[in-house]
Length: 586
Image (cartoon, rainbow, N blue to C red):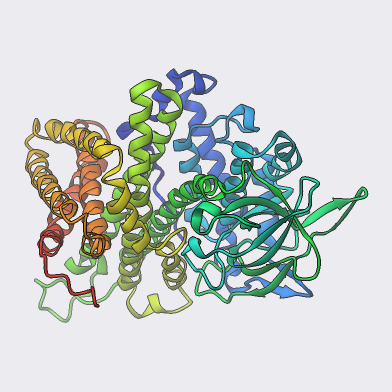
């Protein structure tokens, strides 16, 4: 199997488009130098080579099993988690105060991209531990931090997030797991949670669950939800004992089989002791930190699986001979490589344009996250606003479009792609969950249009438009990028027209939000077109370099995106300006 990503492309985005080395000028990252970031990414390749790439297929075929109440996961997971813990990479992006290495998020994201492209399913274990530990480190008491975070970052303990319940699904308003105050600083947790990724395994000394539950007498709805740390095992009289967290069942998933999804029961046979995080009834606010971090991770998942699919299908197309060029009518000539067929080229460039555009969007968000920790005053506020606005988009676009891209990768292989003899069918199964994880596409559409666009009196959108217009202005200065800068300016104006039209319906929530998923699709298309112009603006300045062919291919892919993807905005715009809503019934 070929390398699942292109290090040269990753370096281009990180160094040339976003200049991530410039972060070292800020006190927060002053302990680093740009060449140290290269070493971090090299370490990701080493981890992928040792623990991830060799087990991509086997961990899918030999999926987790529930044996005598404990989940047995693939043997490779334990070694991977241990190395991540030993190397300090589970919490590397945490501040020093929280036990981390204060690594920029954009570097941590690139490290994850390399690992995830090699084996998207296994990497979930450390991603979940990272999110759970960061939440405790951010909002927990000093006692909770000392009790749980060090072992989680060391890889000795793993973590989960427990939100969803059988009767509630994505509607957290309807969470009914209960928490009874025992009067000694602990709580008895009782309820069931479903679809808990990494909910159990055979190798961790402990598993730390972050559980949403309601205190007795708490308000109904999301304002009455509190957050608790509930370990699988707790200490009692100096001994580790069961904390009555029971694995009720294991879901047999379509993909991502190395990470089990569990139905967990808390307090079914006795007290399941939990520890309150922060203040009562603020659990959902705390959990949103972990959820937003996870959403960028899910978007990254869509991008790195699409990357793996692209590189495999590209290699296959360069080796597989079939048919002849359309201009060749001589049956006596040997078959040509399928990469020479225009439709195969279309599928390859489609994958490349989606995946590399999504990477730009994701690393843009990671850069904003880093700047929000470095800047002060209005600049800091703007970086945070942009990150908040774009997080649902950076989750949704790579998840939705990445799924389509992987399907095109499978299509390149034809019938072989549909068999287990090649990895594309597994990638197609693995990527499908990304538009469901951490809030479905429909939920994020509602978030973007219903909350993100109107927030701060539209200041976040105004800041985004200002950034896009700056890149349009730069694009207008070069003859190669000028036509695409003009196209982006037109699409930005159309998006603004659609946005104003939708906001005019805000007094009718059902009409206002009825097509929010389509609005999300249009918004994502425009901002990824922006990312492609950013990449094109860099590429045209380097056409005289020794890597001319690399930059020419960048420009060609940018052109492909604008000529094949951007025109889809026309239909979306027409639909979103149409007041005939056919999905609302009395």
